[in-house]
Length: 309
Image (cartoon, rainbow, N blue to C red; front, side, top):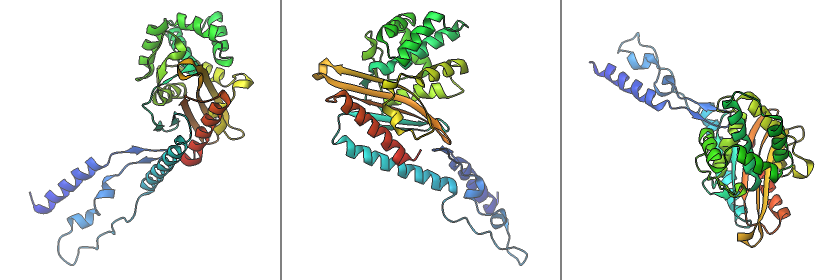
């Protein structure tokens, strides 16, 4: 074929391959053919007085590209701030999921931590999946146990529901359906090990219309997490602003294998005007419960400061 036509076909193919989308914090970047090729007139014009001038090539990044660059800069700033704080704090990891876009930021996202009581959200999700599979509502007893488990962090209620869902094997099967790839269930449920990346996935299942949990199950779970008793309303909720709503579950445990130092974990969702974000912070090695809570809350606030969610 003629040289000019060959060049156009090659450029068109390159543009199609180069148009990969990129999802960010509420933004989407998609390069189309017009972003790669000059105007059709410039590509097909022949010599002669009738050929018009070529259209000016676009200059500078598109709005979507600028948004992506800004997002990366914010994430880099957050990582830098967390690195600085990590030099003076016990070990921690944090994840932030934008529930509007599905984008997840994770700091030390592959590190495993013992869950303490945040596993109770996982046990509740497994219970709700079982009820869905049987096409029924929770029984009165199951609902009462779930309310005590989440709102009051009652351990006896948790042990009872852990049996109901099938103990280690049952919870592991539920986790596979929920997409938790790194969580290892322990027969002593509070010693289950997980990552902030898995916790972001679980919190996403409670927020997303698509997924194994139906609307009724999600509403019940978030409703219980939104009504925990007053002395447990700490943790990631510290990043919320006045008027925003929080749904949280915290975990705390002085660990004998760490000389009585504290595991402090917090997971939850914050919603409001233009905001729908899930945050998970896992940590251990704190000298006291109060010190651990302070660290978790500082990390939570840092995510909002730098990601500007």
